[in-house]
Amino acid sequence: MDYSPEELAKINECLKDLAKIQLFFRKNYGVDDIFSNSKFYEIIIANQLGHSPIPGHSGSRDAKDKNGNEIEYKHFKESSSNHSWTFNDFSDNLISHMHEYSFVFSHVDDVNYKYPGIMDWYYLVDGAVMEKYLSVATQKIQNSRKMINVSPRQLESLGIRKQYANTNIAKTYEGTFKEQLLGISNISEKLERLTGVDKILTSNKLYELLVALKLNHKVNPENGGRLGAHDAEDKFGNTYEYKVYKTRMWNFQDISDAVLDKYLLDKKIVLAVVDKENLKVEEIYSADPSEVVPVLRRKLQAKAAALAAKGKELRRRQISLSYSDVTSLDSFMKEY
Image 1 (cartoon, rainbow, N blue to C red):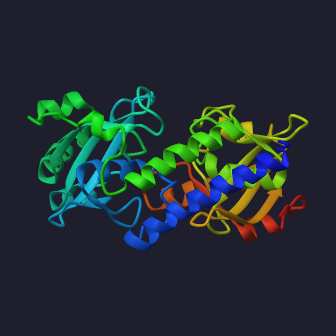
Image 2 (cartoon, rainbow, N blue to C red):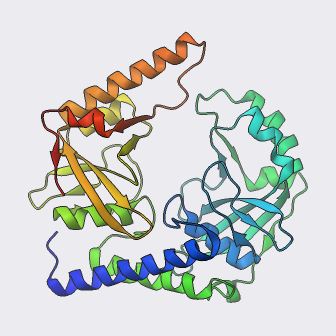
């Protein structure tokens, strides 16, 4: 998408301001990427409950309370189609350690309040309660993803009562991180206005924007991983699939046959390396989907066969492509 010099200057200024906010959390809390994996929603929750965020994403807790107790956050947004909390890739080992920490199951209202929204109600649940509940409830789960949803009604059935936030205070982000959260809200609103991309801080849109600016592409303004959706397009209407990561290892998740067939409709698969802490593009490569998709299919089949040989099933149709996987392709090209 062609931006005027003035628009580009404003976009770059917004990106610099977001990078400064990231620097604050990295220096003070060791949290180095608040715009991936919904981490900034965890900052909203921590701010309202007086908690301190801790480093890490999956596999670690999200925050500590004033007494140093570790807490895991689960949230869903009002705008989401799924109004329950999801446990992905659970295991007996994971569940057996839940008594060591607590849970906050929260609701983020991003419809009636200015984006990115506020936490207006939540449940605080002792980990021992969840350990006991999930150790029984997960026994009947048959899906290969090992995924279970927990609803407000189910928590209520355990005797847990909903707690409400003071929305008059929450909507102005009163708390430790007020300045940073107001900054995120105002900057994202400005970026959305400049780029036409709604809810730019979700679904990896921010990092896709960084890449699109280098390639003169337009980011698809729609969120979500719907079949048929693409990440960006050029001025001729050609579509592109973006994979944007911190290293030369690009992850393809939930790659069903239908998704792989969809990739074949794209002009190129774009593989980018981005410094997500400082919001800077480091490298961009591309390859033709007609060469990338067969590699993904072969690696997926090999992964399934290796698991089958161990008596295990393929739980997640997920494959990573390394730099060496793609450099041998005839269509491989360095774009930036």
